[in-house]
Length: 160
Ligand SMILES: CC(C)(COP(=O)(O)OP(=O)(O)OC[C@H]1O[C@@H](n2cnc3c(N)ncnc32)[C@H](O)[C@@H]1OP(=O)(O)O)[C@@H](O)C(=O)NCCC(=O)NCCS
Image (cartoon, rainbow, N blue to C red; front, side, top):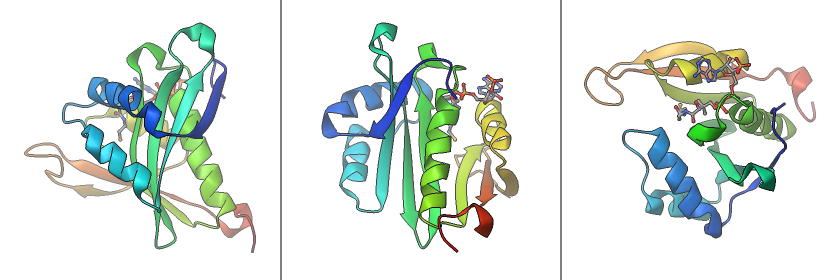
């Protein structure tokens, strides 16, 4: 659980500027504002946001975007504002996506992560994701992706 008080909820259009700000601070090749707008409109896509306590002065601290397609959950994007990292917010956003998958009887959660992104790889491993395959040059020359997966056992799912 995060070390600050947070509330996780669905993103709304009014959150997009702040989500985009966090995105630009997090990635060398950020998604555009329009990409986030499109995600909000897709029925199989969901953007979760983590609001920190107002007293932190930075209400929207992080977000996660996931797809539910063909009975799999795919995590497309997760980022936390640099000033709010290492407080457990990224882990809480991931935990929420995992809990949703369990409740919806999804058996597999997948994601791609840069091989060089040790912070994210450590976070995912901590949540029991396994590194399954390498996609060479997935993010451009010399930037391999690691495909990570979390299999949810039937006993963990919402119904048998
Ligand atoms: C990856 C990211 C989302 C993690 O968010 P966060 O809120 O800082 O992560 P948490 O505080 O929940 O960390 C949970 C655990 O993950 C691991 N972890 C997180 N950041 C780490 C880092 N910089 N170095 C090593 N381990 C790290 C640790 O095990 C940590 O637990 P601990 O703090 O008790 O040691 C954040 O670093 C980020 O926004 N990075 C830029 C965007 C990005 O790379 N997204 C992932 C794309 S695949």
